Each structure stands twice: as structure tokens, then as C-alpha cells.
Image (cartoon, rainbow over all chains, first blue to last red; front, side):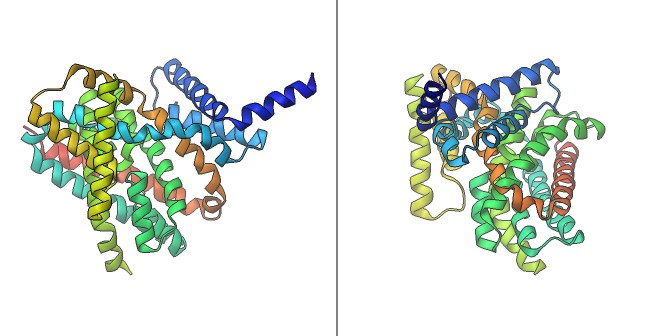
Length: 239
Length: 111
């Protein structure tokens, strides 16, 4: 019996099936907890799924690389999903066009804030130069952030992890922060979370309100562009 | 669903191709999003199958970040060595960015 179980384990760990199934099951558990909590931002489904999967990998001694062989099928869908953001953007384009100037100024202000406060706080607390440079592009979507980190001498892999943490943090903090500040405009709320917390923040925005989701997608796209231009400029000024 | 998914992949592929050929500083899928947007604007409406497929994908957008999110475990050592500075920088910066962006928009964008 024990031998058969071992055979089964060998089979499962050799196919992408296990990683893919584990990802979906962990996410379902995360979603169920999120619903049970009445949509509380603290019960973020991404965070719950990531913690569960990390515990699973750690307890079974499975390398991330092996897990990713299965999970890559889910990961791949990020590309088409990003393209699909054009649909809500198009639907709300009339609203976007009406306040194009305000949107551009807000995102620019947010982009500079994201870079300066991240590097500034790390500098005040005595972080190493490598950490500061890796933090600078942390508010934008992973491929852009990694490209910027590499360009300015940060550590792209550290940046990738910081981007994900920022996204989860933004998704958790946004509702509470914006309520406390008394900002109820869904357009402003969407821009805030999209600029600070890229796709993970945008996913949260779509769960709360469709208009906020559309504005968050817009902010995510424009902030990627703004940050790619601003980080190298600001770093040259600061160093 | 399949034709709609094909449209999404074609836009992404075109986006990746243009980004690589022109050496642009944006990811291929983001340019793909702009291409799809231009196509929708030209068409003047969202075809029903595309509306359904994109709604389905975006409904589970959170799920798509789970594999990359789990990759954070690989870099826990790097983060652990300077974790106070990193955690403080992330919290302060995320809060400040959300507030500044939303505040400027709510002031400038009021109708």
C-alpha cells in the first residue's frame, strides 16, 4: 500500500496536473474565505492562496520550479487577461475622455509619490543601495518593474517579489484608506489603487465596482509608462 | 468563446512583436490592450462573445497572480535580511500613492 502511494506520488509530481490542481484548489479556498468574511479586503484570495501553496511546497519539499510547470498554464492567462482589460476601458471611455487631464495629472502625481516615498523610507531606515533601487519601480506590473530594476542596477528577482507584495498590500489597504480619507468617487478610488498596486489592486477594484476596475486598469497601464520614464530620471537626480 | 480568445491572443502576439521590434519600454500585453482598444473603437461596439470571454477572464483576475505570488517564497531570504526597511517602505509608499492619486483626482476631476 505504502509502495503504491509512493508510485502515485511519483506520477503526480512528474505531471503538470498537481501544480495546476493545487493552484485552483488553493484559490477556491481563498475565495470561499473571502466570501465568508463578507468581502473583507484582509481576506485577500491571492494572499490566502499564496500562503497555502507556500506551506504545501515547503511541507512536501517541492521546488518552486516543479510547481510552476503546472501553474504556468494559469500564469499564461495573465497576458490575454491584460489584453481583455481593453473591454471595460472601451465601455467607460466617454467617462475617461471627459476627465483626461485630471487623470493624467493624478497618475503622474501618484507615480512620483510611489517612487520617492518607497526609496525615501528605505533610505531613512538604512537600507542597502541594491534594496532601494529594487524598490523604486515596485508599483508597476512585474515585467516592466523587472526591466526598470535591471536598467538602474537593482535586483530584478527581488523587484518581482516586491511587486507582488505591493499588489497584495494595496488590495488589502485601499478600501480602508480611501474610506478613512472620505474619497467616494469610484473613478478616483480606481486610479489610486491601480497606480499603487497594478494588476492585483485592479483585480480587487473589479471585485468592488466595475467603474473603479476600469479606472484602475487605465492607471495600471499609464503608470507602467510613467514609471519606466520617471525612475531612471529620478534616480539620476538622487544619486 | 474560441473566436474571442483568438482575438485576445492575436492582439497579445502583435503587441509582443511590436514591442520587441521597436524596443518599447512597455510589456507586449499592455500594447495588445491598446490594439484591442483601437479595434473596438473602430468597430464602435463590443461583440457579445468577446464581452463574455473578457468578463470571464477578469472575474478571476486574482487567480492569475497566484503562481507568480507563490514565487515570492524563493526570495524570502533576500527580503528577510532587510525586512524592516522593506516592509516600512512598502506600507508607507502604498498608502501615500493610493491617497495622493485619489485625492488629486477627486479635486481635479469633479464635474
